[in-house]
Image (cartoon, rainbow, N blue to C red; front, side, top):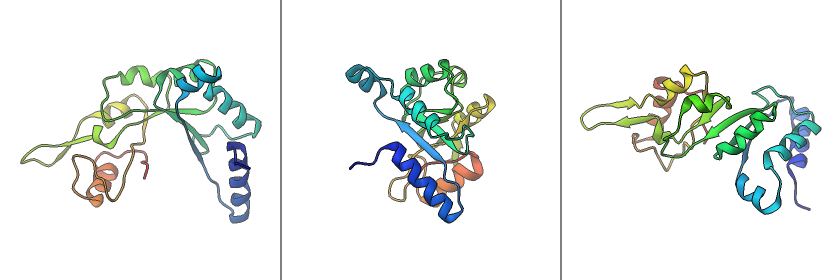
Length: 174
């Protein structure tokens, strides 16, 4: 039998009880538009039903929902989804952070959007993090890995230093 999301959540709850811990959920909706077109279902709505059935806390430390597709997140927001929404974005962002702040709790940008390295100068912020935080958005960039660094960084230590100390992001994915 293949484990479903509800099985995974129940399994995590058992582990949390055994180890006296609290595991948060950070769930990504993938291909939401495709699934709606093919199956006539909103992945986001179905996810919210599962989370509410399992009485998953609405506290942002307990559950966040992320997606690259703004239409799915906007719809969830408009339908009163009680969970915090994170708008994912790739290496290019030509959108409007003010618009995102109307429906999302935070943003999940590529690390490449956050800083730049000019010849002969150090690493500088692009202003993305500052603008997002000014609008009240949390910033959770992705993906920090040992073998692949953002364009502006030459090492994992440098990436960590810039993200944590200089930019002061709220968290990041590894």
